[in-house]
Image (cartoon, rainbow, N blue to C red):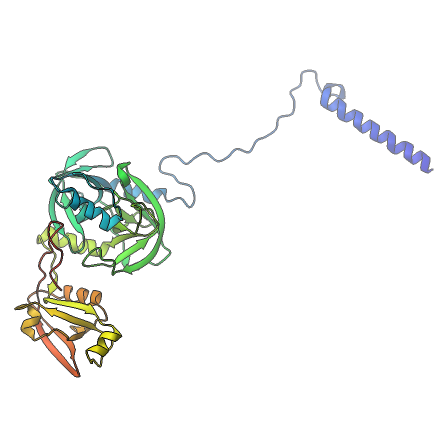
Length: 387
């Protein structure tokens, strides 16, 4: 019985092999019609690329399309010394070799359809001629409406209408980890979009501007991006790209942008009044350290030490003296120089404010009449004039 089973299984195997060979080489012998078409295989094809106006899931293309027309190139020429241009580049981009010529390139953002643009002061500082390159290829001359070296912002104007103005976003709602895009004209290669995240907010103490409250991002920012836009995933303006930390002049993943709230305040002041309204009291402050407090015999460890008082200035008239420690400005606590500067700048000129001061073991309330902050001198002169 076993022998019969082996013979049967071998016969079935041989028959199946023969059928397979015939089906492959002579399918018509198995009942197919002569000349019948061979079996066709279906191929699953990849989805077509998105057409204009569409985007792949997770793409930042909609944000880039929305914001890019509002970002322009800025070309400048100036009869300046090579040293001043090089100093500006070195301060904002750590570039020891670039920027020594009489021409420069940066970026700007269209903020109104009738031709107002925001950019950095260091982009157009000392420029004799300024030309704007629009995203649609047009080139047009621009004039300076006003500058604010303290925040490193400037407003330009072109004689065109119907321009694609950017939509302002809410930088105050930014959180570390939010996705952002940087748009500008790095190295004059043409408009470029890079992406990254918000690395930090409220960065200060960098020594770039008098007023510092930077958004930090790892989106690639390079020379030429200055004055360009930092936008969110909806294409709304969050900040004006200003500087990077770099040892080579190129991006190292640490870039800084001025928040849109600061930019809007400066822009409105320059357009409507020709100046940014900020309070000033005429003091030279310094962060108070524990060692300082001990050496001066102070009973307070937090506050701002006044190291100098401008003669005949508002603080001097109020009785402020070197060695005083300011702990509050108009009821707002101040723990460091940046906080004092912001608090004083927020005061309205020609109004009165109370400074809470420690002098040795005394606690004083001094009333100061606030003045308008003098405009900082630009690259041709020394910056700053007290607080």
